[in-house]
Amino acid sequence: MSETSANVVAIYPGSFDPITTGHLDVIERGSRLCDRLIVSILRNEAKAPLFTVEERMEMLSEVTDRFPNVEVDCFHGLLADYALRRGARVIIRGIRAISDYEYELQMALMNRRLQPQLETIFLLAGEQYSFISSKLVKEIISLGGNIAGLVPPTVEKCLRARLKEVD
Ligand code: PNS
Image (tube, rainbow, N blue to C red; front, side, top):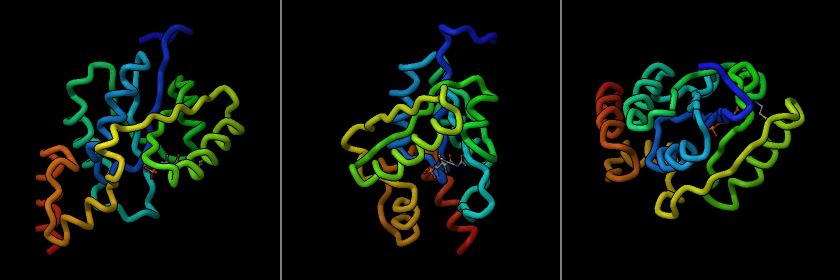
């Protein structure tokens, strides 16, 4: 697809280890604001994730299948450089609470310094998702707690399967 100035391409970057219902809500809201939304996973060997990048991409693709303008990808290196390579002018990040803001502000300003044409847009997930994080979901399920509604059902299945493997 050729890009014109009327085509707004946005990137929603993150670790998505795994994707939660809060992430999915941000994807849905973001997809309504742009022509194409690229949900992209950072390849970060240093983070020791529970799921490989390929597994996370598969989960993301499955749960975003119903959004025709959403694409799933992965990247390494600087987000600002990747955004430029993908023809994106907008970065989308979700903000849950004021505690997220300081780190997000720093990243947004740094990305703008690296690529002045990049704008970061912060989206608020629905308030019912404001306490969800991938980290807490992993902790709760590993300790036998109920995570229904915190992640899409297909992701819950993958989490249960992964926990059985590491048991
Ligand atoms: O879901 P996360 O872990 O909060 O996402 C963080 C992410 C991937 C958006 C951030 O770590 C990132 O953009 N990393 C890429 C490297 C980079 O560009 N670093 C400078 C950021 S100003």
